Image (spheres, rainbow over the protein chains, first blue to last red):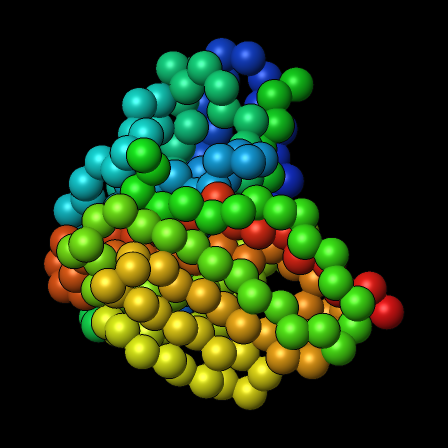
Length: 111
Length: 113
């Protein structure tokens, strides 16, 4: 089945560690996105990529990094510089001229 | 003023009721409007996608856009307990390479059997 797969579903990080969240899609979509969702705050855009080997900062990129080496993959690294990383992270993709579709998210918690 | 305002609720209705969910926005350049449904601990699921003003119907769901009032609505007829979720409105200025979504904060809906 075609879709967007995020892994793991739950992730725990120790203080000072970097962690990488996986997002894979087999929909052949060019554009991919990372959002952060906090209670009462809605979805906020972290990074997005329109094509392979190119990406742009969203509204809250500080403390995060991404790469887009393959069309189907857009991993997000939460670095130790992100002071408040506990959140629900959502990956999305879209085809040209179509709305975004989302994966099922990764919940990151700090130990 | 926030770009997109959405009443967070919570909204609680009996089964079979008609539900009205609303968002207002300030950016008159928004042209594409979406409604997503999000169940607890899951990603948002696209429900409705409309361009510019007017109505769009899909089964029990009707999306309405009034660009002159900067107001969008989602109506759910014959609501079911399975409709209990958070509903997010979203909108964008364009559909091309600069496409980015601006979301409301979501409305939590509970449909009671």
